[in-house]
Length: 341
Image (cartoon, rainbow, N blue to C red; front, side, top):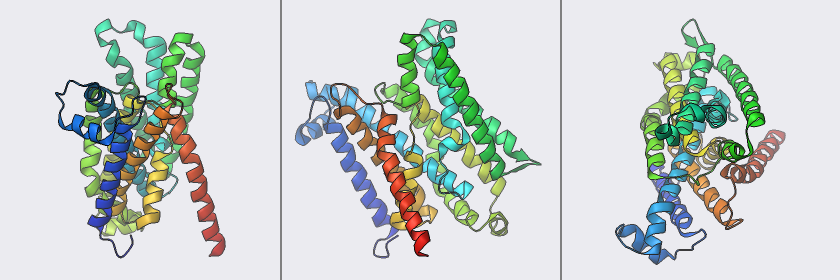
């Protein structure tokens, strides 16, 4: 972190930036809302105006959900990169996102007909969430040998889970009808178009354990950079930390997938950007990655809504369009640094 900035000041600037991106995202769309009108609508939920209805029924839950999903993905990516000691790690590495997509697509294609009508509005999101958790439990079980979680084995198990989930999803897509394919696209490409206060609340509940525990993971992740043996000598309970971190990431990302489908790159890009800006101490990286992820996701959602208005781009497509060039720039920057060393 730049020496002239304290941790509190740097995080304060990120909070301010997140607030500005939030207001911008709330203002743009098919109906442009001027800043003064937007602020008045936010301060008066009972106002009977068109702008107030748009803000409270459409824009606010959607923007908050986008910010929450971005924060979860950014924070989860930072945790996974610290846990694996690999800057290319992200939440999708464990098969969480792919498992969630498999559960959702399977429910859409073959499961909804078996579900009672009152439960159908919740069935697909519920299946995505449960499948994401199940994928994580399987990966964690495969990586546990003699009571110890082996990070290398977890990586390999995650690759296998991703391949299995992708194959299963492709099989369901092949068997889907034209009408089902439209719903399948939501889960495989991501979208915030189905945002609601109920969906936001469920995502908040899933994300809370990770958000609350993140400050307590920082010391252990810092110690893990030195190696597992050195971390043990510092009194870090590594096995408990590994299991706790993986399960909380799975819970939070499972909730994000259930709310918005599969979204890539945020979990890799956000931690990279904050490390470039302020170093690798996790007491800085974890909160900064969450705030950066929230900003990236809200900005991507705003772009998705206005780029081809009145239509809407899938958020997964936007995150890939924005994230891939940024990731390429990071790789080229790292390559240049290695060549100059």
